[in-house]
Length: 411
Image 1 (tube, rainbow, N blue to C red):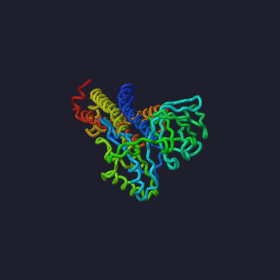
Image 2 (image 1 turned 30 degrees about the vertical axis):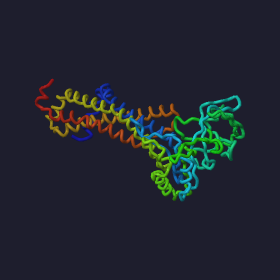
Image 3 (image 1 turned 90 degrees about the vertical axis):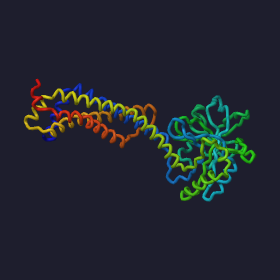
């Protein structure tokens, strides 16, 4: 039997039972649609969180405290102040280091601007040179602070204060120790792609505001920071500085290594390595969720197999007639495999359309960029077609085993 004839007979059998065929393919449609929708949402979330980072020729090495997430994916970053001023000085002596910008937060309770006030903000220290190197943001107004008495605020903080803050305005910050500082806004910074959960921030110089200290293993008290940003002189020096920094924190000479908790570790990474680590976590979570949604594909496969078995039973006499006029077992297998293949293809196409449509609605609601997971679309279609073929194997084999004489006896 020619392939074209098999397609014609199969299509006639499918369209002859439109409702049954539609219900059969719904499992495939839902399964593939769910997978595509989750891949769109996962890719859009990752692009929103990481898409603004340009790591090409980036000369930043990050030193931070990490620990594995219990009963979950990936890692957690901790903000324990364990990196001392002595650690910073030692890193600054490494060949190829341009400067070191330690990170830390200053506890604060309230911020006022005119009649507006907020308690949801974070005061952070920064080296003013680092704003021009920031890979995920830029100034929308003004510039970095020149010294004490000035501050840089981000756009989220400006919006929380009514959106009327301009360069040159004064804000009053009440720190947790009760002291109050009037600071002049030198710039408004748009810190893009900080990710969900990151609140409004303002930055000030380390001196004279930052006074967080810890007792070092030698018994002295020193300033301590939550993480360290190491800026390298050139991209060619990046690997050397990364290796030397990591070696220092593994040598037993650093205060941080002796202060860090046993269940945590000091991670020394380039920005590209860190983003790759985060991206891998996004992928793991997305695939895990999509795998759960893929259970619908198993349901769809069972549905196709069930309907094909019913179809074999209903068409036993037809199979007997085809065998009586010369059709061999291969022709019968081909006929039923093509029928299940068509059901799989229809389900795959419908699933891709449903997934892209559902994914578009989800990312539009979340205000994420639309991402088309081309690779996963191809994989989903191949899987859907494969499900159709595999589901039809047993019914096709069963149809080929029909005895033509016994089949022709049936009414």
